[in-house]
Length: 267
Image (cartoon, rainbow, N blue to C red):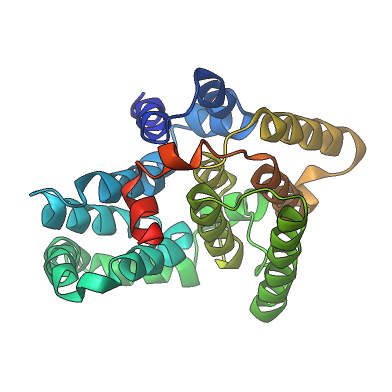
């Protein structure tokens, strides 16, 4: 329920039509995320919206601290977003100190609770996953770096996204703030050793279109009928991600600048 409300809030802030809202919540990956009661929309989309909303208000410090802390719950998708948000606020580095202190106050005490401390339990789970986790990670992982070496995965992503960017410029399609946020989420997920398919819906939330909806449907149905979908998850999801970035048509530029992040980029 809260995930759908977050998408409603995102649609409102971006001045999207009801059609774009429906294109998100009816899409295959979003429905699967909801069916599995997954928290990725809340952990990845909500903090970005919170960061935008509190900018320039009296709640900016607290809101930014909470946003950065929440993103740490899903580091596999949030690494580049973290860097991007801090870079967006680079004109006021002093103003970022307090939010980072809030992150430290929230995260460090929790990390050292337990015996052994939770942070060590988390690392151990990554290095020595349980049989149950190993099974789910083997069938639900969109990571490219797991199937290729990290360097090869990075090269594939650089070439793919560069070609998409050039092609969009050639087609005179505008690269928007939504494209940037979705791309940062996608690249983080593809480079991480493990990212569940449910996380993918968080990136798609910033680039809604019916073109994306139909691409998801066609690729999923076709791959289940013609090939073994589970053997090609990273490549198929990369195809859907690139297509969704291409099909997304941002709102009128003046309306989009209502987003605080877009204002920061413009300045």
